[in-house]
Length: 115
Image (cartoon, rainbow, N blue to C red):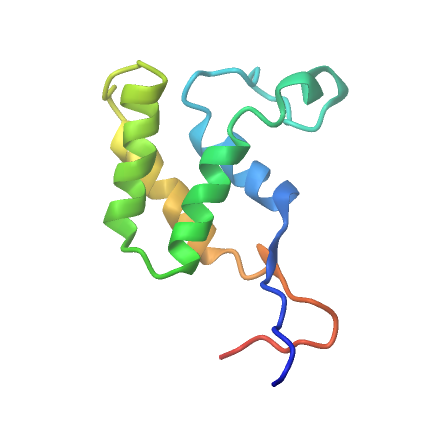
């Protein structure tokens, strides 16, 4: 029996770039700043679990609309912000950005990308 191939790993910094530039539903990041600026590192991981879940869902083939619904639910219900204007558009933009990033996932050394 062949050994199991480890799953690809997510590049958290790239996922954070997407989350902070496109989503940031509670508006933590001051305008013109980056999540990895020294003053912002204390909250840099605020959305990690949600974004990792969304990226994983997409990788497993969950429909774009369903993943966007997940992010809308996080913002509207879990964060208790309600479905604010632009909420669904931001969620769809996050999903599109995750899907469009060819370098979001890394593969173990020696493993080729399946096409």
